[in-house]
Each structure stands twice: as structure tokens, then as C-alpha cells.
Image 1 (cartoon, rainbow, N blue to C red):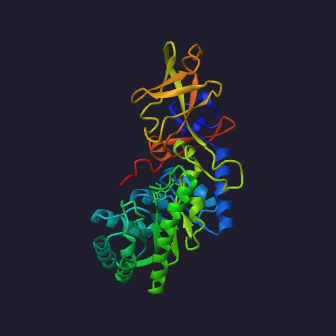
Image 2: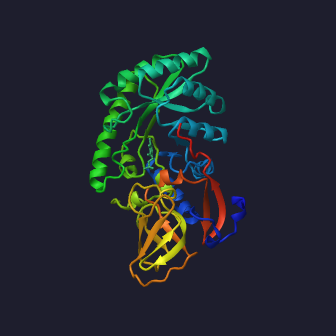
Image 3: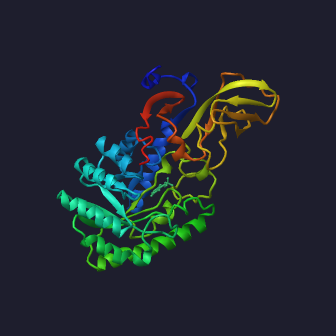
Length: 376
Ligand SMILES: Cc1ncc(COP(=O)(O)O)c(C=O)c1O
């Protein structure tokens, strides 16, 4: 088996498929566009690594100006910390005894690690363990934006923050308000209004906590979809967007305003490269990218290349996809490559061990997806 790094210098035609392809110039344009937009708005980026699950990419985002990295789960944070990244925030709940012990261990590599809390019962247990070993951790109060998945109801949040801050070993640094259910609202205006309504409530909580004497300086909010609306809330200090780097069909299919001061929005920079593996029927061919290559959520992949091949994709089982050309007499040969768009970027990346980074159709780098499988 050829080591993946040996593919540096290869053309797309020489890659084993199905595989993930990131277009480096488009990725870099997205990195620069995000940072320059946030700079103008006076906000920081604490980008979410759940999108790419790669400590290499996280480091690249820090190089481009991100102040820190979000992890969805403790095991993602452990990997990021072990690779030397600092200023990490775990955006999801960490609740079991075993996870508390690992969290405390993780503080050794990453003393500025931030954790989110939404349960006083969990906070008390964590506080006991921290005091037992003479350590402390900084926390954000996770606010429920109305999605009801995690988070403290807004009305209880100030009392909750006070209680947290009184517990030994825990220090409330701020709030998190991530409205996952609003990110893909199709109409820009509706998305903007709903997100700002939620974040204004969160801002009231933030103010009241400060009036109550809590030293809070972090208000972490937003994803790619609500970014343009969320930066208009003065109290927000940082944005947690992740998808902006690669984008996907889900984000391509919603409305955008031209907040980046350039045509369109962030560019689609990630695709799946597949190979035609069977062509024995008229009207369609079979490619090697199916359910194990493209996560089945967020729509149907589009054929990006060959651009001249106007064709649709259909799921064709675990290992296969069906490519149906608009012109049924089109000739597509076994061995030809077909490049497909990604419907939902995060769970699709989680299917791969690496991302081939490409410039002008030549592989220039390979990013390991080293956080792959870190869902604990
Ligand atoms: C807590 C949290 N913050 C930020 C994000 C990033 O959102 P996006 O990928 O839409 O930018 C997510 C994505 O699911 C998330 O769960």
C-alpha cells in the first residue's frame, strides 16, 4: 500500500478513490475572507474542528488568525491538545466520571481549556473531582437558544451561572449560545431575525451575570449560517463557525446576502473524487462512491467534474453510486474519474482518514483526519 504522502505531486487521475479532495486556493480564500470579515466587525474566530476533524487544519486556522478551536467532544479536545493546540473549548456536555477524569488530565496539556456546563448536578460532581486534585477549570454557561438539545433555559441562566461560579474549582468565564436549528434557514431575513432574537436574550443574560459580579468576558456564538447576523450583536465576542472552510450542498442551497463584499459567499472547496467502475448498461454508469463515501444527509451529490457531463447522481448502495447523464448516449468509460459535491461536510469527512489537498489538479499536501472517530 502506497503511503498517502507519496501521492504528493500526483494528479487527480492517480489517486485511489473514493477520496476527499480539498482545493487549496479556494480554502485559503475562505480562510482569508472569514478573518478579514471578522476583523472589520471586531469579533474573534474560535472555529469548530467538528467540521474537519484535523489538527493540521486547526493549526492552519490559528495561523490565519483564529484565537482558538472548538471541539464537539472531549476526545476531539484530547487529540487537539496532544497536538499542541491551545485555547480549546469543548462545546458539548462532559458528564461521566470517566470523562471528568480525562478532562482533568487534559488540563495538564491544555490549562486554558474551556468547558461548557448546563447541569448543576454535573457541575457539582466535576467541582468535587477538581478540588480533590487541586485543579480548576474555566467554564462557559451553555444557554439553550430554544432548540432544547442542550443548554440552560435563558430564564434560569443567571442563577445557574452564579451557582457555578461559587463552586470550588469552577470559574465562569462567559456564555455559549449556538442555535443549530437556525443555521440552514433558507431565507436570509428570517434566519437573521431569529438568530438575533435569540442572541439578544443571551446578551441580556450576559449583562445580568456581569451586574451580579461575575467576571465574564466570553460570549461564544454562531455558525456559518448565522455569522453575518450574529456579528451585529455588540456583546458577542467570538464566532464558532466551522463549515465556512469547505461549505457543502446544505449551505449552497440556502440564501445569502453579500456580507463578504465579493460575489457569492464562502466557496465550495471540498469534493469527493470517484471512479467509474462499471458501465454495462445504457443510460447510466456505476461509480465507487456510495453511502460509505458520502454521508446521506443534506441532499444529493452533484457531478462537478467532468463539467461537460451534465449528469445526476443516485445512491446505489454502500459502495456505489449511479451516474445518469442527461444525454443517454454520452460515453463514459470504466476508469474515468467523476468528482462529486459533498451534501453534508462534517459527517462525510468523518468517513475518511485523510484529505488530499490539491492545487491546479496536483496534490500538494495530505491532511490526516486524525480526529476521525473521536465521538466520545
Ligand atoms: C456548538 C457548535 N458550534 C458551531 C458549529 C459550527 O457551525 P457551522 O459548521 O455551521 O459553521 C456547530 C456545528 O454543528 C456546533 O455544533
